[in-house]
Image (cartoon, rainbow over all chains, first blue to last red; front, side, top):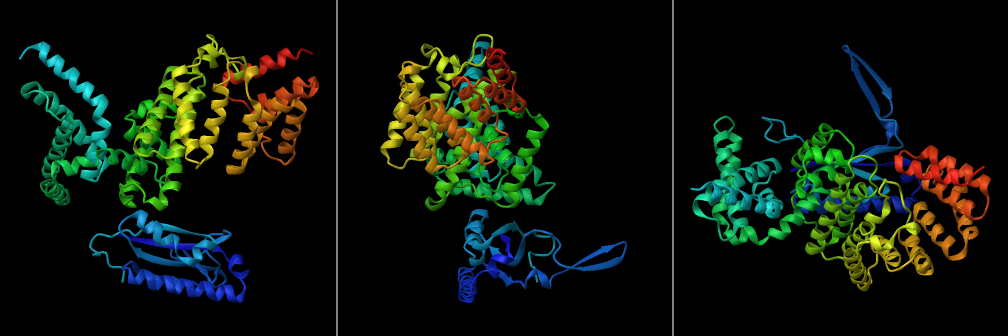
Length: 123
Length: 418
């Protein structure tokens, strides 16, 4: 079963890491993605640019408005995501908890909905 | 067949239901992979038992018979539904082929583990806390939705909704039916102990209303505690059961016939339940012997010091303070500090206790906690500082919702005179 793991943290925490620590974290994250792939758990993983690069788009009565920033005005923001293949929620939780950037904030683990007729494919 | 025999069989089936139904349910949930399916199967199995045992006599192993019958009734039901929904048929065939593969012994070998699986699943952290509570009481304890609603002073429809949503989450997020692995056990066990303690406290601090129901709720918590001790003999599990037994042992002495509150130092200790105390003390010893002492064990040890004192004056407050010193480190919280302050006041005098209470309040903590103000009031009263006692009692009254507590505080206030 597939789970979307949305990694979130307060960006100032990342900013407060020294250059060395930051590089180490990225390396750890990349290594973990390899581990997930090797274990047959990886479906897709990406880090995101910071929320300054985000644009939120809404459509009301056919009219499009776009504004600067993320959709939720919270201190903690989504920084990246991993789609995992796991046997059950417990396995998904254990795998998600070990994603290195999670220790800066947290990760939401949500099952991917299989739409009828899609055959479970996401791409 | 005579009426007498039918009645006898029905009584026997009810007896078996009382003692075995929870265990059978736990196994059926594992075999069928679904709570609702398992509940239906349980019902069908017991219905079949009433007929079949009257005709053929009671089976040598009623539990095994019920599990087996329940499973096959579920397969039949699913096959019937498959005529309208093919996916039900797939489920039926999977269960049927598992049944053919298992030796009956293999299916039943895990009987005790199944109850543990059930407890851990109902208390899974992915479920909202009030859902954990409702689901545990319903599935593990077998309480009806109405009974749960009465115990927690909510509506039956609210409880029912919580349970439906919890089952949906278990299905949609695929929360597995398993006992957590060794590494995850401490944290997951904490959640289970917390739920059991919440259940106990609902019954323990019985407010006005059906006090008989409330006593039952504490009884359910103790039953759950005993189950856990059987299945998972860990120190904190002993500690929690000890704590509940020691608190419950004072039930008869805690209220007057008129339902008024009687504090610990005024209770008639001959009304304390000696059996529960003996059991509680033994469990505390077992827990402490393990050298892995956690918060429930410490709280139980404190309760044990009280239980061992034949009179309030004989209470070894020094020991209690020492235990609180450890508890404050293990589980730091202002409430624990407050309770420690009460003990310090008993050991060193009200002035010392008051200094600690004031330190907590001046940090801005517990300012809306009625017991902080009630404690402050009591200590001021003992120091002869009547005006301060009066305003502290008044503040505590503002924060109290419970009738019995209210009456108690008003009495204390009146005793201060003018």
